Structures are given as C-alpha cells and as structure tokens.
Length: 530
Image (cartoon, rainbow, N blue to C red; front, top):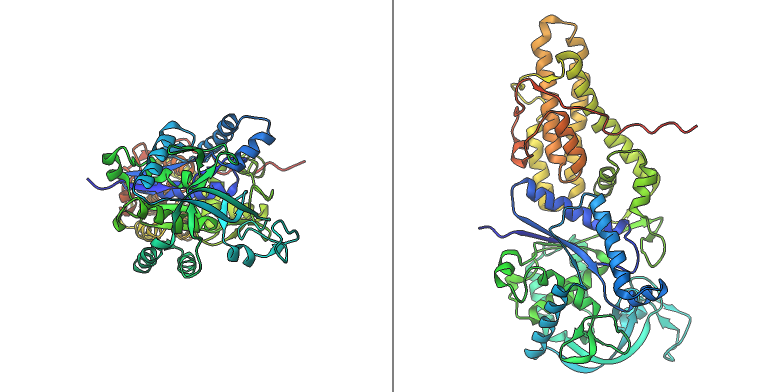
C-alpha cells in the first residue's frame, strides 16, 4: 500500500485573528492536497493553531480573558475562515489539546532519557513577538535601536525578522546542544539540493550553517517567567519552549511516539509549507530535533517549501505590525455580491505571483486579475458556450467532436509538471491558456454564422461539442484551485459523476446529447453605484 502523501502548514499563532498571509499558505497546501485527491491518491493535510507562550498570555491578559478561553476563541476564527475558503483539512491540531500535550511530554522525556539535553544557564537576545532567540551577531547585524538595557554601546539590537527591540535574557533551563549536529546537517543539506525550495532559501540555509550558531536550542523555559505552556515532566519549574511544542505537532499527529503503525503510514512529511521567515526553525532546528530523537536520514521531511510574503506597499504583512489584510474584508467588501468570492480570492493569491516570491496586495491588482481572467475569460466562455447550446441545440450537448481542435487534452501534462514543483501560478497559467484558446476558437468558428447554414449543421455540432468538452477538461483541472467554480461548471455541463484527473487527458467523454444543468452567471457584474 503506497504511503499517504502528508502535507502540513505551520501552526498559526493565536495572538490575533488570521490574515492574508495565513490564508496564502493554507490555500496553497489545500490546492496541492486536492490535486492529489483528484488523482485518486491518498493524502493527509494537517493544519492547526499554536496556543502556548508568553505572547499568548500577554494577548489574553490584554483582552481580559484566561489564556485557554482566549485561545479557544481565536483558534475558532482560523477554523471558521478555513471553512469559508473551502480548505479541506484532514486534521486540525491545537497545541492545547491533551493528545498533543501528552505526546510532547513523552518526547521531551525521551530526549532527557537518551542524554540529548543539558541543564545550564543561557543568555541571549530574545524577541517576544517572534518567540525566538537570536545570537549577538544576528541581532546586531539587523541594526540597533536607541536604548541600553545591558550597558552595550550603540543601543540594543533588534530582531532580524520584525525589526523590533529584543530583550537580553538570562535564565536556566534544559537545552539541546546544536554544534554536535552541525556536521550531519551540513552533509544532509549538501546531499539533498532540492530539499528546500525555492533555491534562494536553500542557499540561505547553506549560508546559515557556515555561520556561528547558538550554542544550544532552548527546550524549556522557566515557569516563573512563562507560565502558559506544557509542563515539563522532569522539571516542575519549567514549561516546554513554545517553538519546540509547535514543531513537534508534525510528528505527534502522525502518531509519534505512541502509534508506530500510524507513524509508518504518514511520516515523513512530504511537504512542509511555511513562510520564509520561519525557515531557520524548520530547516535548522527541526531536523536537528528529529536527528536527536534518533530518526534516520530517510525519516527527515522530504521537502520544505518556503514561500514569500504578501506586502502592502513595501512592508511585510504582519499581525504585530498592524498592516494586515483581513480575508473576510476582501470577500465581504471588495468581492461583495460574488457568489464565488472565496474562489476569486484563492485564484488571485495562487495566480498573481510564482509561489516562493514576494507579492504586493492591492485592491486594484485583485480586481484587474478577477476581471481579466475570471469574469471576461473563464466566465464569458462558460456563459457563451451554454447559451449557444441552448439557442442552437435546445440545451443538449451534441455528440463528441471527432478530434480535439484545441489540443485541450494535452494541458493536463503541463498542469502535472507544474504541480510536481508546487508551481501553482504556472499550473493556472496553463489552464487559463486553454480558456483563452477556446474563446478565440469561438470567434474563429463563428457558430452564429454556421447556424444560418443548414449544410453546416454537423460542423456546428462539432464546434459546440468541442467547446463543452474543453470546459469539462478545464473544470477538472481547475478543481484543486477553484473548487466551487469548478463544481459549478461541472453541474452546468450536466455532469454528475466525480471528477478524475485522468479524465482531463481524454477527449470526447461527454455523453452524446447530454442535457445542460442550470447555468447562472458565474461571475455577475457588480451593480452600478448610484
């Protein structure tokens, strides 16, 4: 039995409501999961929320709530948004759930029992918003802000990620030494050049491994300073460091350490989808943790894809910086009145920029992409095809065309190649190329002229059947990206069975004289404002 394709998103931190960056990662992972399901392959998509740590406790206190009540509320906002965006996950893990808490405690105990941990004092620059320690060199390289909390000349350093002041922390706890694993990780990275994508992120990791690393990775934090966390079983005065807690979800959900059979069927993860700002956590700390647990090289995550950021102007989008785009606002206001607003939003994020690059969000860019690609191209093709079949053949699709004048059945190979590399924009570009070609075919074939020529009846049948079959193929190929729109096209063609990716490679599969279903406008024009 083939291994299930295991796809993950990061666990999203519940210090505030979800924004466009969270949705981008999750939509991408969902599109790839849907693609595998369309191919009839077993797939498991994991997402969820990260709910411990100092930042959560502070946000809860600010809201006047207990941490658990606060995380319950915000986690549900993520889950609700995923439902609205047609995210079809197979599990939704919350780090406050007992199943995760117990597994994390067992794993930390295992590290202790196998002498992987040391107990010592630790000091370094700590960013509370990012819950991350930075070395002196890393923090100072990022710049400095006025202030001198430790008597250092030139002011305090700032966080390389968010550019806010970091706090110099001294505390005791349990740590995982990093240096003993450096040589192994260097060798693993060198032997797996496609492990991190895109290539710029791979090169970033290689460079990082040549620089001074923190001496160790904090596994625990003192409960006196951070009370909201998973208790450490062998140290009552400590809680598990939030990043350790969060990263371990990938294996706890997969069945580690208590369910070896489940673990063998899911792990290793086939793709970790992450944002580029958490590359070091996933490509440096995470594999070292797995190596310390004794997992062999063939049990490392198979691929880590670190996508770019969405920006407003030139700033990275960030909840803590206050420049976020709320997906609900996009759908409720910018796309108001669109029955398939969630799919329009999905399409824009996946089509606008190659996955891995940074993108700039604007209302103008969204509406231009929507109008050009979806309303004027795809929506127009569906509407005119159904209307002509209504007008010329009483709402029934003629017998399949003998040949494929659009070479539509070949598009699936382009989509297949693009999806192998998670190149969502390229896959959508190939599909929309077919749509454009079909619209051009309408103009060239001119069915309205053929209808006036009795001797051209058979030719008109072929034209209408070809357009309908091209739409059938386009609907199948669009299903991972625009599930609602694809399903609507499928129903408008009168199709009732399940879509299968393999059928996009075959021409002429629509039954002769199949009746169309109801066919409302896919993307209605906005009413003129008075």
